[in-house]
Image 1 (cartoon, helix red, strand yellow):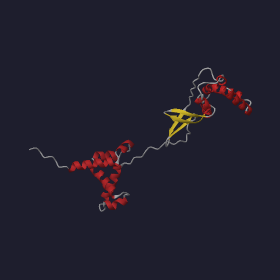
Image 2 (cartoon, rainbow, N blue to C red):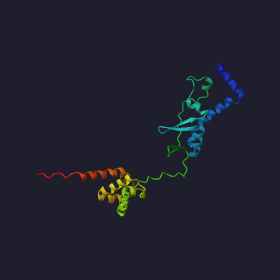
Image 3 (cartoon, rainbow, N blue to C red):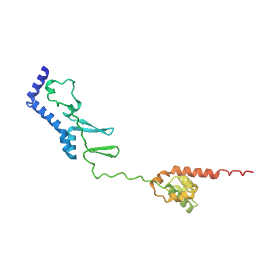
Image 4 (cartoon, helix red, strand yellow):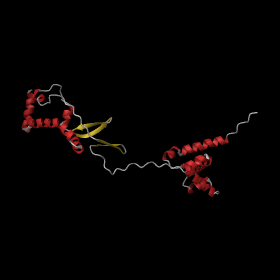
Length: 222
């Protein structure tokens, strides 16, 4: 008790209004919740910025890093037994404070969060992915080889901006896929279909059809 009085006297020497300022701070904290409820979105954001220096998201729950002296009240008393002079400054009953504020979320190389203030309108959403029509490319290679029968895969590759193996694989797709599938995919602009019909899948389908055509016919039963 003597140590507490010594600390209070020392604080009064530095600031004569030490206790009065402390009581006003506690009264302000008691009124803060009602002021927050009555404020608009911008004023709520100002209150939240004064309460805490940073907010993090933990399982969809904002977790504030309180500023002083609010951090002291958020942490609670350092000892379970309050001294009489401090107990007189406490509110008689424990109060639960719920702060509600709009949380804006945006994904851009990670997650961006904004409390109380929406993101600016100059945000440009990501462009949809563009998928290549490999059947159409295969038909173009086939048409080039038909128009230039003297060309080989090796000599035609640089003129088509491809390598020799790519030319051979594209011709395999154009020559071995079923005609109805070739017709359907050559005029297809649907991104989902083009994403599903990737180059390796088309080549695998063409290879399977080649194996079936090369397999010997079954012997007729006697």
